[in-house]
Length: 577
Image (cartoon, rainbow, N blue to C red):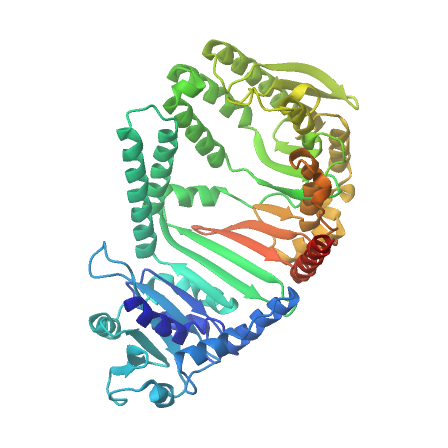
């Protein structure tokens, strides 16, 4: 019954879709109680409604106006300020174990007209009780606070308390106004979420331990537990914003704010913007995903610590003593100490070639020659430890010094361990050859492209030679591609890292994969996807804050809508036959 009552109340303010703004969106922070766990804000209600409809139209989706449907369901006719900002707020229960309660904050132009159709008992009272829907409402400035009928104490406290969300989240004001909708988890909300997740992890771990069997997965639970325990103390807010422009381009930004002086804040401070071309060394050509970024030393050390803890906690898998793990991690850290950044490229590749044949990596280094020497030394140590450990997941690797276009390099060859239970799988060896190359062996080639760059690729020299050319001639690289450059212009300047996803490349790559895994590949036909700019991702930093950005160009939305219709027609035509 309570759920049925809550629905129309939520509908009353989920005008989280609506029009042009009179007051800045950030002003809604002054109406949100300071003890809120989190909230969703929707700006410029009617204008945002129009943007959602335009984006849906670009994807050829028939979507009714969210604003109209919500007003109709809530019974609201007049009095709502459709140029204002609405919010749905999660409030704590009386007890930490209680579910969060909902408070709605609605912008009003005329309170009397707003409540008129809602069958209010006493429309002139400081707190108005309505019958349809059953709720309590009270004005605060240009807003109305709305709660379920049984939450009078929560409403009174929200009206009387001088503590507002603006005190903690005032730095978000300009950004709140820039976006069409924003979701925020406050410090209280982050801690509650982490507590609930930790509770679930410990419960599952306890069940696994009670079984009495050794389970390598326990180490994973411990790592998750450590991670969320750290987040509970070091993350003070998480915010996600979405904005849609006139071209139906969608921009999503996630902001994670770290407690000043915390380890997380130190790592963020160390993550300085990368080089001008974060795709350096990646050749132009059809791709699925590509990206690159600076690599802070603190991040390398953190990854090595995690790897070491994982390996020590699973001796039955890795077969090494703690001393051997420490030796391996120390050498791995040494080999990575000169790495300043990396980029990677998964190309579509050519039909008939191994899947790995168009994977390319570049590393930006203090000294490329020194890196190759240290890497070779690390492989030799890993081989010695692998022989001692006799681990099912550690393979002995062959290293050979080679030259590519007169440049020193290495050929690293290893055989993938056979997963248990596949010995009797038909054509498994053939599948591994198609994925990895001749003999099912992983062959990686590395070469020094210049004094500070090492490039790497799998199976053959050809992609490596293209990468070396891209290092020497950036104008021939992926960053100069017309579509990639268009998406780059939509992303923030001077990022720490970037990534790009090509829908067309993904479809073309899928068509390459279908014959490998589908018994009758001719029965699965994917039409061509048109050329579009890729979807873009970027990481930037500010003081005590990491920010992730996603850009989905409007052209991509339109192409996806048209493509889905094309696939539907193709499937329908085949069924008709």
